Length: 60
Image: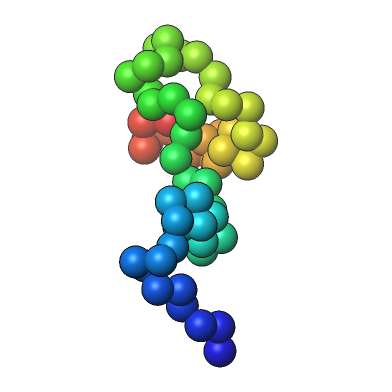
């Protein structure tokens, strides 16, 4: 099993790298209130596909 580093000796960049390895980069660069209404998302093809799959009765 991998040994967990002691948080008191871990630097900020090491902590961020460890968290990114576990959780990935899940936050967008901009939030919806910072973008123009109707503006396309960041161009992520999987996000576009997911939005296209929303049935009309769900407000898509």
